[in-house]
Amino acid sequence: MFWRSVVVKLWFTILLLVCFVLIILTVLLLQFFENFHVNKAEEEMLRTATVVSTLIDSEQRQDILRSTIDTVKSASSHVLVVRGNGQSWKAESNSGEFKELQKQWFEKDEELARVMTGGTEVKKVASADGRKFLAVGSPLSGDNGAVFVYKPLDSVEETTQQTTKTVFLGAGIAIVLTTIFAFFLSTRITAPLMKMRKGAFELSEGEFHTKIPIITHDEIGELAIAFNRMGRQLKQNIDALNQEKEQLSGVLKSMADGVITLNHKRKILVTNPPAKQLLQSWRYEEELEEEELPSPLHELFESVITEEREGMTEVTVQGRNWVIIMTPLYSNTTIRGVVAVLRDMTEERRLDKLRKDFLANVSHELRTPISMMRGYSEAIVDEVATTKEEKNELAQIILEESERMGRLVNELLDLARMESGNIQLHKEPVDVNLFLDRIVNKFQGVAEETGVKLLHERSGLPAGTVSIDSDRIEQVVTNLLDNAIRHTPENGSVHVHLHGGEDHFEIKVEDTGAGIPEEDLPFIFERFYKGDKSRKRAPSEEKQGTGLGLAIAKNIVEAHKGKISVQSKEGEGTTFYIYLPVENLPK
Image (cartoon, rainbow, N blue to C red; front, side):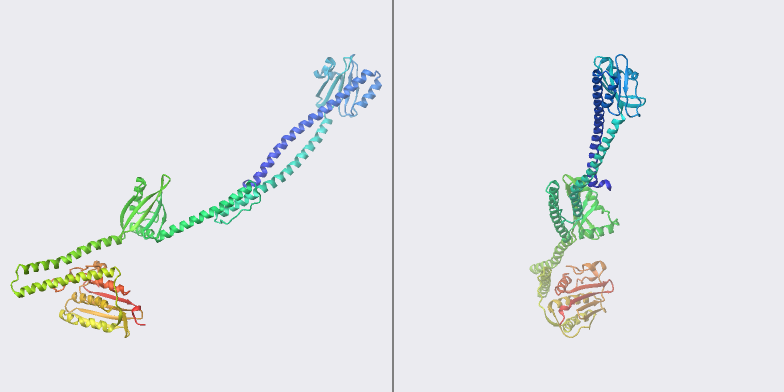
């Protein structure tokens, strides 16, 4: 964590750079001062040698020369005078720490010997007995002699050490000041950056109202301005994306068709409720895991990805027909996934089947009476019937068939109006008890003729009237009673029960006839339904049904905001229920 801080990195970089520069500068300064002090000492010693040489040339008394030389030379210096005739004498230092050198040592040193032989001045750093010292030589004019001045290097090194201490002290002070300055500078520079980092984290967490204060107007200030502008623009973009997402989500949820989006790895990304419901039913049917795709969807996916074009298939899931249209999704030129639209075509298929069945049934229902009317008409025209009674009989048949065609056409028109919502109800106050008694009494004679016992009961309904379209409801009850009596064998019974309550009243028509097969029950209220052979009317009966009665009855009851239902067991009988809601009851 320590090295991840910009402050520390900047501070350490500045400090390291300054320390590097100070180290190089210190080394150079120390080398310079050391050479400077040595050169200054050599020049001073050379001047002393020159002065001594001049004194020797002008003064012959040795005692005076010695006292003068002691005065001229420094306290730490030694002076050795070598004459051309081989004589020599010394002026020793006041310090006894340095051992004096003999004439032979100077004669053996090649550089210093040149003073006597070559007459040149020499300066050098020499060593004897393991100790370093400075030595200079100056020739005597008019003589092959020389004046040598030497002193230990310790005195020069003491001065150099004092200079070194001063340099190191200055370098230390510079490092301390640099540390403070670097930390202050890095803090000033990085403080806005740290605020921007905090603001960036807040932006990543969805806090788009974060604003960075603009303290300076340099590059960092411009960066803060750009950051604030970026935050505002990002908020606007996120709001626009959220709105589009909500709109898309609303559209998907409100769609009746299912929508599924998959990526290139066949992973489901987006679904809407119809698609989820279909996938659940599909996985239940094929016993799949939660993330597995059903086999038809998987095959269509592979086909679309491989061929890079739209594909379509139709499947049946849990008894419902679905059409699947799948289209590839592109990222530039690469397919990144697919979108599938699943449309429930069950109702369309059912309506197509009903339309086809309707045309077939109407054609079938009209073919018989037309053929009979045509045949009997031809018999009359061809005078096949010779007597008046025969002609009347044929005319009666033609009349009955024409009435049957009229009933069929009228019922078709009524049913078409009802299913289109154009049914007109003429409601009026009706006493339900008297209303039902009248209908039951009307069928007593028919029931007695066929040997069927017709019973009528009521319970729970208080005396009073309800608001209904009596003609329409009578049409419904009449149809149910007619079917019940016709399909009940001799010595059977038909039971009509009226039950009333606080929120509804119910009419139940129960017979002990042959019943309806279980596979026919879902289609009992469809047009032209005539059931199995046990429930078809005998060909000898005068009136033959059109198969539209129950479909019309259902539409009439539903127009009254009620419900009609049926229960049946084959061989035991059938029960129809008519339920009408509370608004039809008196307040």
